[in-house]
Length: 306
Image: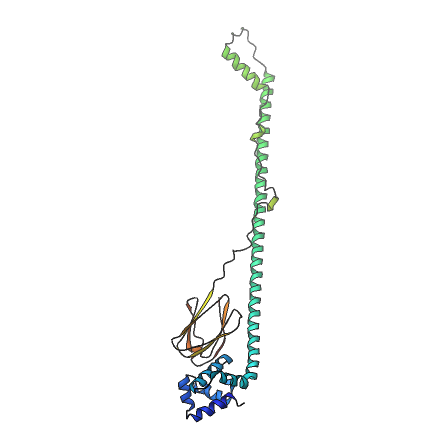
């Protein structure tokens, strides 16, 4: 079976069309048309875009598109099989690098939580020790004050006992009832030493029942945020073939004509391949993206992610 390029060239020349006329009719660059006819697949975009060119070329010549695709697969199969293997290797490398970055981030978060927890525990233990020291100091001061008051009362009682009552030559007047009650009260107060009840002692603060760790609640990190969905919008300003790989899934292809729009949704990232880098305007979650390159240039492995 003759190659697809030779087949197209033969039909084109039979119909009296030039390469430029076919390029104008299909909106495919003339150098791509020439490369397709010559079987120079290395100068063509990725396989999905090349298939689109084959369909457009066959349609412009009034040929069966499926038969043209079959001829293309026979002609370029070996070339694109190797290219696909290289692309799969690139995608796998990108995914492995993303996983490594995620693991490093998780380790960093875990270390940060551990450091914060350690600082919190040390601060709590230091505060507990300080409270115990303050309480013991207050108790010691209270005990010393009570001992001093008791000693002063004992000295006063001893001095009164030594001096004894004054002797009078005249008989003392008969004491009245209020005076008797007052002397009885004084007698009671001088024969004993009153101390403050134990209930008035300063109580020491004690840590929790479980020691320094009692009552601690450690939050392992911020609550998991629900993953926000990624939305990619493309609007064509020129004829553009697009291949989109969503979250490492199977590639999806589309041919966008000027003014046409397309939308894809994912969770993590999009990997784009554009047959015409300057032929689209892109927004990610409503945020405009920078141009992917000049018009007419192929852009490979454009990664859009959070």
